[in-house]
Length: 140
Image 1: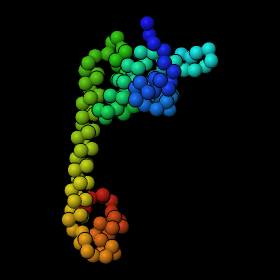
Image 2: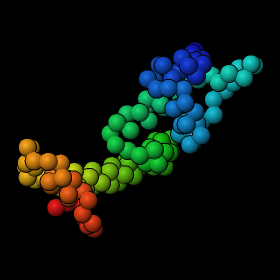
Image 3: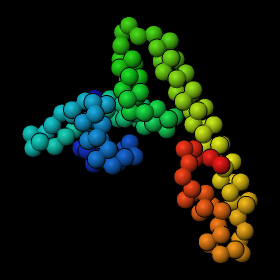
Image 4: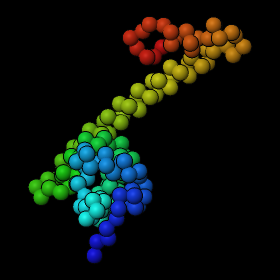
């Protein structure tokens, strides 16, 4: 027997706010729920499992668009594991690019911080001077 939960209890069970549940519904990540005679949304164990899947995928860095595709593949009778692997491989490449960008930013900020004369007036701060300089790049 599947237990029915109101949106508040459902949101609490999966660790999100009710507006997050409504957002997932608006974006077709979660099907429109059944309703009580009074019009209250009701959710079941399948919905709990689906939102847990969504949340775990988000923690791994997948976007909601990617998660929608993963959910679609998961429910497909014809999809192959290779389809999921392709999405995951693209995600890994995206993450490697983001990591490289963050490392570049860290190096630039570290260099600026190392050049900062702590006792100088703020007008002589190289960090502020760098930020005020027109440039096409965000690094030094």
